[in-house]
Length: 217
Image 1 (cartoon, rainbow, N blue to C red):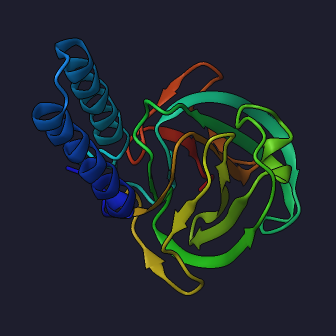
Image 2 (cartoon, helix red, strand yellow; image 1 turned 180 degrees about the horizontal axis):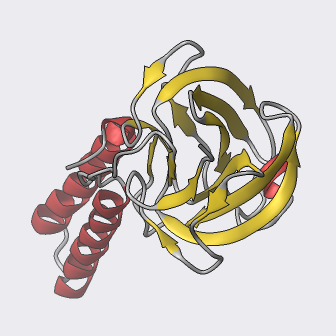
């Protein structure tokens, strides 16, 4: 299944690839050139379809569980100060999303969206620490009766568009889709310092299924 958040890009690229294949088949005579164009078009289409894929997920249940908003590699698990929404000491868990990962983002907890901010910015490589503050990103705060969670969608070096359908006041369910970051990116998640991290740097996270942390009772 192709994500609805990528229909514009996917169908544009699909149209270009089909046009190239038709041109190669009917207008290009040298066989080497003909089949080279077809091969490039098919590879580009395959990469695009892979990038915008949107598989179903089965979230674990529990209001205290903080699920990964993104697929990718855990690159940071560390103590930090979160002064925008939690306004307290926190654990920061960061996930790097390569162009080969699924890029659809999912809600980390069930509850209500209590904070939202969009920040235009630069496009440093997503795995660099300065990307968290310098790059284009959204800041989203959610809360339920167990506590608060803040997370950021951060554009990477290639990414040029963040999609987020959330707004303050929305009631959301953990594991449901809410947007994506196109073409390579990073997600930072902040949980209270009293929470228990469940992942370590180097772990692989699956959006909507991997438990990043557990909020305290």
